[in-house]
Structure formats: structure tokens, C-alpha cells
Image (tube, rainbow, N blue to C red):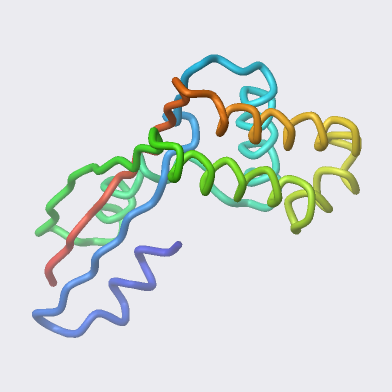
Length: 146
């Protein structure tokens, strides 16, 4: 996202709020090698598309670069540890890695094979079913006042 554009369109005495995840800061238990491959692949694909997979740690800096001076910075987390939340999160990524633009980009760019993606998908499903499964997503957040 562009904090400079947000600053430009923000009215006087307006507020800009933003939150983004930090993929490098995501972590989980139990350790699953295929999920480490997923994380590395996702980050690579995002950067290839000129995205920033670790935007969460940069939102404060980007707000300052945009010219905001009244910035409140914080963080929050999502945690997936119950059978229901693990099923949702693991299922979401198990499908996403096989049947979205992420999968097409990985295959077309020869960053992964169909088998690699299937292995990652199965690992997501296995992680979701593990009774000790735990996953956290860290977000960086800003509230800027003009």
C-alpha cells in the first residue's frame, strides 16, 4: 500500500489507519518443513511482484516517509490454536497454494512444481489437524493524524 497516497488524500484533521502482516515474523508449532517452504515461497513471490511481504515492520517508517508526524504505532497478532481456527487457517492456505494466482505464479515462474504445491497443501492440512497446532501472524499497525 502507499502511505504517500494515503497522506495525499487525507483531509485536514483526518485519520489514516493501516495494518499489515509480517510474513517473516509468522511462526508455528509443530515445526513443519513444508510450511517453511511455503513461507519462503510466499515471500519470494510477493517480492517478485514488487510487494513487501514483511510490510508490518515497515508501516511506521513508511508513514514517516510520507510526511506524517503524529503517528501511533502498535502491533497485534492473530493466533490459530483451536481445532476450528486451525481448520479454517490451514484449509484456507491448503486451497490457496493450489488454486489461486499464487499457485499460477509459482508454477509459471518455475519457483515450485505441482508436486511441491501439493506437498505444501497437505502439510497445511496435517498441521491443522495436529492437536498441538499453533500459528501466529504478527501485524504492524499505524494510526496517523493529519
